[in-house]
Length: 295
Image 1 (cartoon, one colour):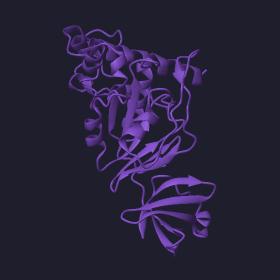
Image 2 (cartoon, rainbow, N blue to C red):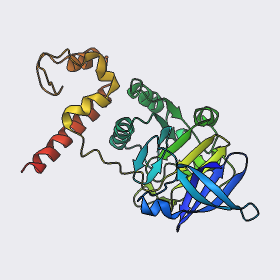
Image 3 (cartoon, rainbow, N blue to C red):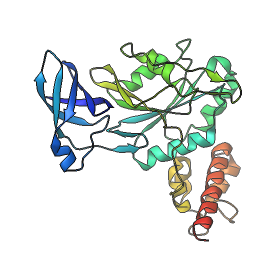
């Protein structure tokens, strides 16, 4: 039988087989000999030991489409990057890092802003304008009220989705809202830090329906872009693409150089100023990291 690993705990792998359910499996010794580690999200073949006990063995690891290293999860169709409008306020530089990391791994991204019931409409419109050209669909949600959840369910249908974002933004509440098979513990907000307490303890692939899954991924809030060459940063800003190659200087960084096509587009109002500011912030950060490496 073929299935998908939904959870891995203490050497046991829980494999969902469409139409049959979950089987508890151990990995055959060949995995250890070949130094292969099955991951949540992997497509595998299993041999049945007992239908009554719902037990089996992993016998083959099928080719992976992609892999995220932290936490290690495989075969992702898309990532939903979830932030909140309040408690905590959205950290847009962190959002930029998520978008860049997803693009570097060729994983399509969705952006969700939760708790819109606590924000002004003008704030939502400002974010909509800011990210209109980023290449990722935007969802404005109130998981508590149900706003935007039908659209979210449509975008999750038939996909394996990784749910990313800082703690306290409503990831567990969102997961509970889109399925009723697994109840995720919802954490409280730390008053001192105005951020959530991470309640997820392990990576788990939750089956929404027969062909739709969602990852609840602990530790997914600190993706690292430090190894990105600063000269490549422009490639991760789709809004810049019409202007790249039209600057006066080859290798223009779009910061203070004269006759910069990107800066000219910004002056005309063709680029969102906040997105450009984020680009500038990250470029300068990467430049500083590069200097430290070569000292």
